[in-house]
Length: 109
Image (cartoon, rainbow, N blue to C red; front, side, top):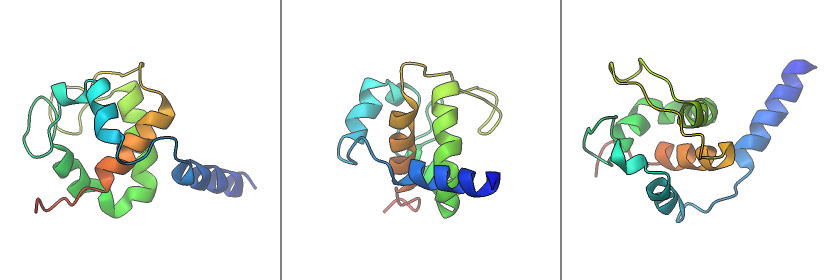
């Protein structure tokens, strides 16, 4: 029963949208994500396109993983520089950011 409840909760999280995809780049700007991340260039953190290329095949799972990383920070995935916590970003906003990042074509058209 607990597994089913978790699956339903995860599906609800993935389907619930509070921000349109057109608003996400503005949200990323307001949250100051561009200080560390760019579309194609490595800055302090990895480029959005590299994150998408690595994780978009498992987007159903990675939306929540990346959203938690956006809000709570973490380290060790892309080198020695940790990602700082972004407690000014709500979990719903972080999920939208993660969905948007994972929707990017990782090949770099």
